Structure formats: C-alpha cells, structure tokens
Length: 207
Image (cartoon, rainbow, N blue to C red; front, side, top):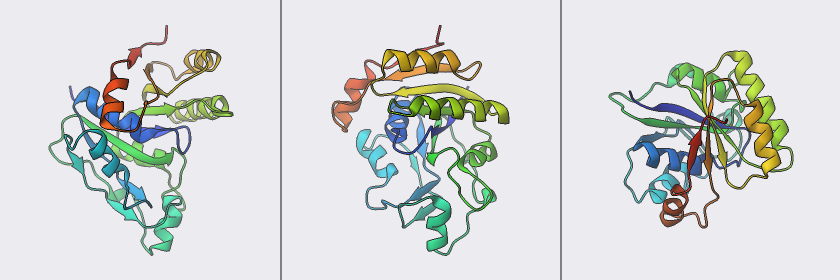
C-alpha cells in the first residue's frame, strides 16, 4: 500500500522541509509543495532536490507566489485567487509527501486554511513538532484541533533535539492512534548531514 501523507507543522519554522526530506528518503517517495510563498530563488523544492542529490521526483508547485508572507496575502499581492478546487494529487503516484505552507491554520484565502487543503486532498497528516518556548502549547492546541475535526494523524514528527520533559508531554497527549517519529538535528543542512541523521531516525508507537 502506497504511503501518501500531508506534512504540516505546529507553526512556521519547525523544520517541515527537513522532515519531508527524511520521509522522502525513508519511503522512497516523491515530493510536492502545492504552494510556495516567497523565496522563489531558494524554494523548498530546490532545497529538497539539494538534500537528496537530485535523486527525487518533485512535482511542480501549483502556486509560486512572490512574497514571503501568508499565502492568502501573497496571492492578493500577486492578484491571484487560491481555491481548493485548484489542487489535485498528481496522476499515477506511488509514495508521496506533500508539504504544506507554514502551520495548519495558515490561510490560503479568506475562508480556507492549509488544514482544509489537506482534507481536500484526502491525505492523513504527519504533524511536525520542534522544541522551543511555547511549543508544548502550540503542539497540544494542534493535537486537539485535529482531533476535533476528525482529521487522521498518522505520525507526530519530533524534529531535532527535545528536552525529555517536553517529549514526555507530547507523546502522552498525542492524537489517538498516531505513531511517533524522532529525528535528530542535522549537523549541517546538506545531503551528508541528512544521511548521517537518517541513521538515528526512530519510529515507535509512543509506549
């Protein structure tokens, strides 16, 4: 059975693209970033290609917006409108990792959010968490929001170094049925750094 997931995060800058690179490598998956908002000269798709030595199938972005702000505002600046019906999964796909933009409640227009895009694509969630001041609150709010909406969370992805006290709380309160992926911080953001970190990737059920 193919592994197809939508990767989102508890906020911006939690390392979603690094997490996606690890998942692409782990499952020999293709990669798709539906919305790239800003950084068009150093996009997440470009980073993915670099981290995996160009050995990855990358589907083109549906929207490439010019300004590094929330997609709904970047689209407004570019005078375009983003709608859920604009997105569909690539044809004839096997394993696929889809990366959202920012956190799951980042708006794509005035009424819909990244989490709505994940539901529209009918993909289970991998939620990326990192450890910083406030991250427990952001993580638990994300867990509860996903559970209330009935969105399937397949994994929580603990990205980088975590205090044991933080990890314990997140694992104890993770969405029901979800598993845990632990991935160490990269020594350097490069294909070699990713390769070294992959040796210490752990997957478990949280017990």
